[in-house]
Image 1 (cartoon, rainbow, N blue to C red):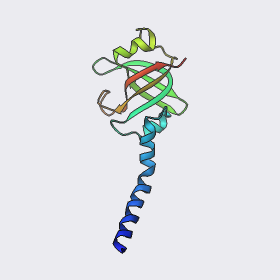
Image 2 (spheres, helix red, strand yellow):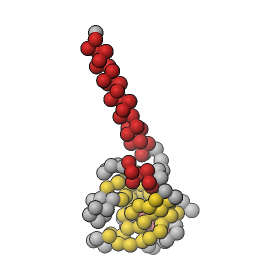
Image 3 (cartoon, rainbow, N blue to C red):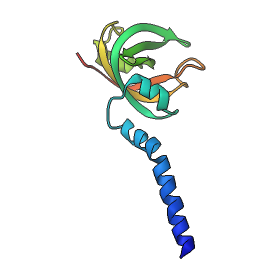
Image 4 (cartoon, helix red, strand yellow):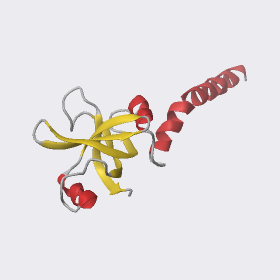
Length: 127
């Protein structure tokens, strides 16, 4: 009897201590998150969604198109595949100042080494 009570207490402790991290992870798919929150809490491979204004357009190594997306909490690099450019700006290069919502995988594999960002899988203009 005493052993089962101890096991139950340990299980409850693990659930409650892990709940904040699990709650944030579960919320990733739920909607748009502030960029600062994503940068602080996302782990490699997480699907994240952010919204903001394009403040810079450039290329990463290998001629990959990368935009800097900024909201009131910070900025993040986003690799934009060619097929998404057509949706964002009628096939033209992204425009600085355009307000967009981007969803994609958090990581560094699609960006320069040691630089974290989002590999866009969904994108839409907000304005």
